[in-house]
Length: 355
Ligand SMILES: [Zn+2]
Image (tube, rainbow, N blue to C red; front, side, top):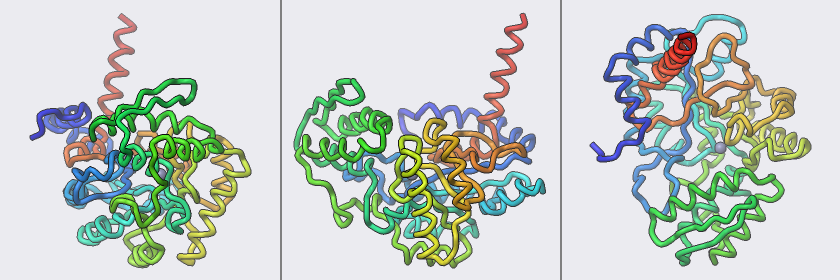
């Protein structure tokens, strides 16, 4: 067992060990859970990548799928949307598996596991990434900080002066964690220019697609097509170039959503029915975004706001939990134990305020 477990893992272990997860699994069986994964990797100790939060170790994914296949009903997102839209019931303890962005590892590592356990998943793809037109800005930032020969960079952004220490791999990871939230705040029109300047200041070349470390590589359309035809995978939309939609003007937003839909249609011969907002937090999409996604013909859209899928949830703001890193964390999440704990805490505070 690792010496320093992250707080979420400790909390998850307590919820499972105390029996609260089993209790919640029974009490909250009518609520569905949507999980968000990104890529997978066979070796998350590889130092060619700084941010491993987007690429789960494949063994962990396999163990999570094995547990879900035994203890839960993994259903497709389309089935969940249809049941919720028509007010019909879902199987008890339903779980939906989703992946964002469109990494080749979804085909190379996740697809065989989904087939082995007979599970279904939706992969939300940024179509410009699959077209190999534009890699993600956060990949370029990761590689710029990871590959530079510099040991330090003072960087002014959003009126702040960041001192980015780059002397060791761990310091580079820490500096990236400092920089990414600031980059996410920039208007979409400024973001790529900022990454160009960052690469110039760090004296690294913009990477090419052939140059990307294995976990960062995109799916090919052939891979997407094969998975889609297998019946185990639906391909959903995630914009064309992966901007945070709330930082775009309405024309750009509309074009990003429509191009994504049209590229998937052209390559797979089917219109995608579900969409996922890039970054997906409450400030990352607007009322206009919801309207444009609906107008483009999508039947549902996922956020990354944590929560359970109740009867009353909006089909265009479906809550999703982030990627569990272990089976125990997955159990605490899909059982609803995290939510039960939150509810108890709120009831407790309410009761105390009445004393
Ligand atoms: Zn994404």
